[in-house]
Structure formats: C-alpha cells, structure tokens
Image 1 (cartoon, rainbow, N blue to C red):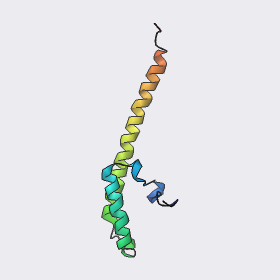
Image 2: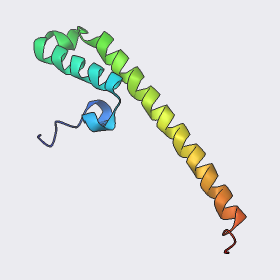
Image 3: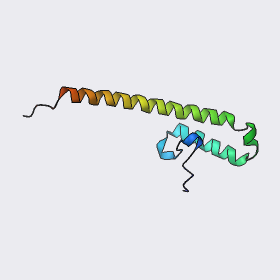
Image 4: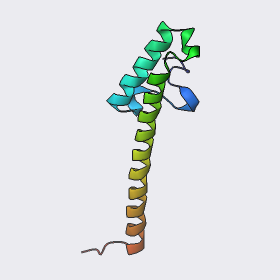
Length: 87
C-alpha cells in the first residue's frame, strides 16, 4: 500500500479496517468509478456514489462521537464516585 492509498477525500483515511462493510463497499465503488471514468469524473459522473459514501462516513463519525461521549460520561461518573471499597 502506498502512502496515499489510505488517504481520501478531505483528509479522511479510507483504509478498510477503519470503516464498516457498507462504507467500504461504497468506497470501492467510488474508486472503481474514478478508474473507469478518469475524465468524466470531473463532470459529475461519480457524484451519486460520492454523496452516498460521504453520507455513510458521516453516519459512522456521528455514531463514534456518540459512543465516545457516553464513555466519557461513564468515566467522569466513576472518577466522581471515587475508588471502590477494598475488602
């Protein structure tokens, strides 16, 4: 894998291990579209796939953000409660 292979649109890393199967499929479709339409991609040929991929990545990002927020709240609660009693 080259250094740029994992890099994607807007600085988002498009490496497969970072995304769901659904998003990986859309990423593959977009890459394939760009290979097949190397000139027409500049005129919107691949835009529908690109929009779907961006929507999927946004959904992933928001879910991860929500999980992180819940984890942070749990950790704050644990810290506030103090250490558990030792037996």
